[in-house]
Structures are given as structure tokens and as C-alpha cells.
Image (cartoon, one colour):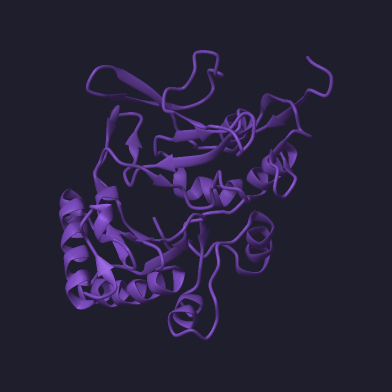
Length: 295
């Protein structure tokens, strides 16, 4: 091993850890060691929402000031104990890791995978196939000068519509980027047409809030409005996993929020901001997993 390298044992598996003092977020001085500590701490929560979902990774080996790259295929040198999902793409079969345990999570993060992206369906390892979506996700993407307050107003309207439709509880997550994600567990009858339902929901929200929301994808139309991206329910799409870090200038997180926070931001009582990982760790101590009811 190189100087400073070490082995840690996680879930009975030895993982080589290196470059712990390497700064990955120059603006905040956040090191690779800090990132590994964060993921080790949130592992039980993140895994509960990412388990059995093929993980696409976005990696920044030299820090967030450099160009990242997406990685789908699990490299050939990966440990044999990582559970995988083999999925047919148009031109090849891709072997994805399943983030089903802390050892797999930390092995991926050791490779500077700051972001983990997962689909809204699970992979059945025994049947070697992908299942129908079991979650709905709505991505609220504000176009400047719209911001999180506008997203919160759309989120409250979406909550009303989903409640009227008889869906389970809706869970808000600030994305760690510009906007918000809204999650709901899907009952069995809706799993076969999740993408169509999300598209219809986006249309209804646009009709209810024509001056605030838009469901058209053309960026030229989004200025000052919140784009309701329903397409992430497509089986081929992925979304940043809850509790994942983001590869932004600051170490923000896809962080679950309370509806009180959303309501107060929507009416201007309190400002809502993207949360960095130290704040998320503190919130977990006092609030636990705000997504505990999400399948």
C-alpha cells in the first residue's frame, strides 16, 4: 500500500482506503476522509432507500473543481462480494452495483463517487429482472429567477392533488442542487403506468398554477417558472438518491425536509436553503429519517 493507505473492515469485508486528506471540495476544505465519514454515518438511511436499485455513480477523483464522469458499469477490479444487476442496454449488457450494504457504499465512495443516482424501481436478483416502479418522483426545477420558494408553492399544490388521488404520503427532498424532489410510494395498481401518471400530474399542476409551473421541457420556456420534470419516472431514468452528496462547489445533500419547512418557505415566513452535510447529520440526530415511510 502507498503511504497513508489503510484497510478498514465493513460488514466483514476489507476495503482499502486511501488519500483521506485529499480535498474534494476546495471551497469548504472538505476532504475525502470527511466524505467517507459522512457516508459511513448515513449508510443505514441511504441504503434503506437505495437498496436493490442499480446505482449509477458520478465521480470526481480530483475534486469538484474538475470535470466529473458518470459510471454505470461496475469495473472488473471490483470485489466479488458486491451484489450486481445485469441490465440489457441497446448495444450491450451493463453490470451495475446494488448499494445493498455499507461495504458496497464505502467501496464506491472510496473511488470518489460523490453522487449516487438510482431508478424508481428495484432489481430482483433471483429473477434477474427489473421490477415495475414502486416509487413516484417529481423533480421541481426552478428556472431563474424562480427559486426554492416557488418550488415549495408547487410542492404544496402537488401534495393536494396526490392526496385527492388517494396516493400515500408525499415526501419533500431539497435536491442539493437548485430545486426539490417529491417522492411517494406507489400502490400496486399504479406501478404499471407511473410515467403516464406523473405526466398527467404535471399537466394538472401547470393548469392549476399557469403563472408558476410548466411541464414543457424546452428550456426557453422555463424562465421564472418551476419546470415539473415528470420524465424521471421513465424506467431508463435515474434520480439523485436521497442522502447522496452533490458534486457542487459546496458539499450539499439531497436532504429530506418537513412539510412545515415547505409551508413556511412557501408563504415567506422562513427561507429554505439547500443543506450541507454537517447540517444533515445534525438533523438526523434529532429527527431521524424523515423518509421512513417511503418504500
